[in-house]
Length: 66
Image (cartoon, rainbow, N blue to C red; front, side, top):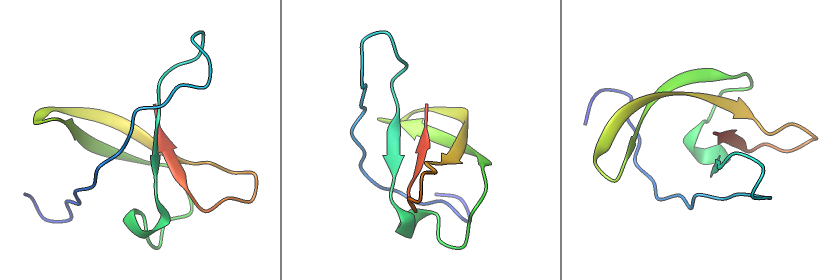
């Protein structure tokens, strides 16, 4: 694991088959952040994949990535 790396389990979600898949990132994993940022993401030991992590908005403190 590299400096600043975090590890957590996430479920891949999809609201509708026509929409992209996404994961929800809990507030404790993005403590101190309030804007979007780029992260290298591993999925089941595959990757890294460069992804944008964005605030969910609408008064929520969670983030998400597609």
